[in-house]
Amino acid sequence: MADEITKLVDMVVPDVFNDYFIQETVRKNAFLNSGIAASDPAVKIGKGGMTVNIPFYERLSNGVEVLKDAEAMTIHKITTNKDVAAIHARGVTYAATDLSAFFSGSDPIKAVAEQLSDVWSEEYTKIILLTLKGIFGVEGMAESVNDQSANVLTGDMLAESLYLLGDNYKKITGLACHSRVLSKMKKLDLIETVQPSELEDSYDLYMNKRVIVDDDIVPDDTGAYPIYFFGKGAIAYNENPGLIELEGDRIKISGTNLLISRRAFTMHPRGVKWTGTPADGQTPSDAEIESAKNWELVESRKNVKIAKLIAKVA
Image (cartoon, rainbow, N blue to C red; front, side):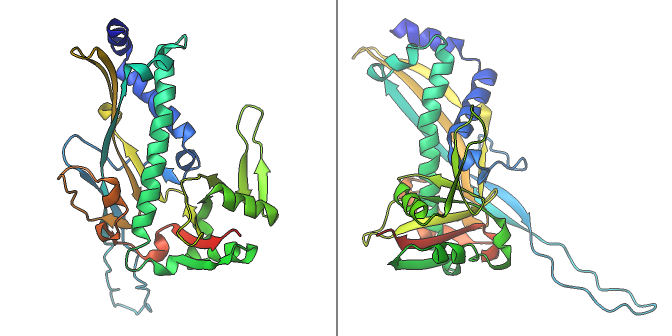
């Protein structure tokens, strides 16, 4: 088996494997393939540092004035600010007993990429959900929450929640919820199922907005479920393909063969800055991501294209 792992890793051409690996992760992750999480070409993740700046322009002030003959207009500045995203450096290792499935396909590289992309898709979703827990505890985000936790979900609640961003309501393009919430929405006759083609998976729409279903969006202790609303590109996902690492190793003393996968990426809510300092001095833990004390609102609340409804389903 040791020789098989060596051959497998030797076959991996980074430029080929990494591109395919990223594409598979995007295809399988609903937040990424729906456009809710999207990359920003201006964000470059290098090997140094554990945060990355995401610059943005401040809203222009209304400096329109009455024109007067022979009198110059006031010059107003266009100001910039910066959002700060944490870089998540994470890895996973599989022992020999878990590697047998990787060698069952005729194309071992494709088999590895497909299996690992499932693992990383789930990890990306987990980080997004932890991040949502954190940012909705931040000062200034309360008005982006419709708390109906004592009540059972209705169509009116959902419709009202679309306007939590005020006059930015048109930016909402999708929502994410637990499967029990989707079931309730279907009982309320609020869901349309779309089949793009025979070769593509079907998906659900609520008022022409993509519905993402994930059972890790769990209810609170009272049985109330969070339902998240998103605009396109609300989450800044960026990754450096050159930092995707796949390698094999062997622990000779125990005869154990290993396959190791590492990635460094952002999965950041635009407009809410990461201010935390990880306890290990390097990359945030799950507990640190979901802690509100590690986040700070840097844009107008309505420009953060994320909102939340909380309600029961029974």
